[in-house]
Image (cartoon, rainbow, N blue to C red):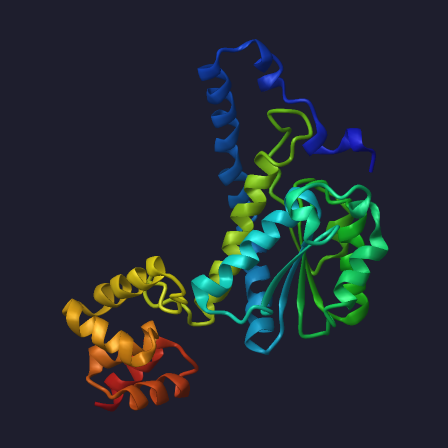
Length: 302
């Protein structure tokens, strides 16, 4: 595919005079273009749902989720992966972000790394990729050699493959079990895929991880009941979540959270049912950590 044929590299006729505009009008043009992103993502809902089901199946079976990308795409994958442990108490290796060029590339470009397909393969080998895992290849152009190499290796291993691109008929799409391709059109600044394409990728990644975690039982109603309260802000959030779920007195909430080591799920179980810490923990385990299912089980038993 010639670079000039890529949608993300095209010239946007809506912004061809952007260098002549006032500051307010520049921002208006950018905002106008950004409004198109959610609509492009909406068209991919069916494919995103298929990808979520694949990820859920893998994670619930002991597999791992790898995001692989270069540049902005790689950084977005790392961002989404890094938010899973504090938000959902996932083990650090359950969701991993891999970027061409390694950790150094998070902060500055590593020349040539994204052009090396063997490096994408090697980086997954180093993580002992296996058939239970899922690899999500992220590339706005859909033709980044590093990401293509990673998905080719994933196919050889027998791992599921998902692609996130912003160009139809991109080579990466043909390597994926499920292809997600929100076509956001040419960027405000030609080729600057950190803008609309990056926003679309971020939205899709949010959906993949959040929906998979909901299906894994890490959300009750719409509450973050598996939050890992590792700082004062998150400890306060844990208190608020228990308050919203139970309506209990704050002193009681604090006492129960202290007793459970700030396990939000366990604390909600105890406050809603009057169970002891050990009994609440046992019922939760029997229901595989699904708080709603545990509460419904107790209701049926009563």
